[in-house]
Length: 115
Ligand SMILES: [Zn+2]
Image: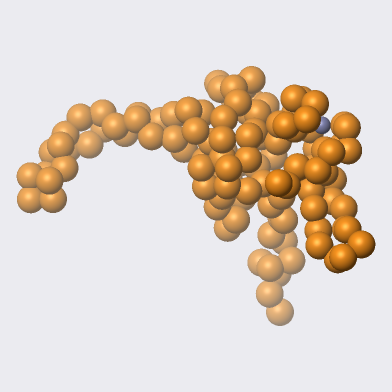
């Protein structure tokens, strides 16, 4: 029996979603989701949670030394999707259309979040 599969939270966020960071040093920032890590339950949000990585130069691998700024993952529970219709951060609701396809909807205004 696999407990991992059942414990894994379902991530409703997708690449390209506009999200708002709710906690941490970048709280209040909005940005686009660059990638989703389902295993770690984190998302990479552009311009948010920037970490500075100090790298040593390695000429054989053509790596220049210095400080590289890079987005670090944020836990999905710390970001909320921004609705394109009402412009506010919202929880995601799920709707099943009559033809069986699932859509994500804004809990505030009810408009469909998937284009
Ligand atoms: Zn809305």
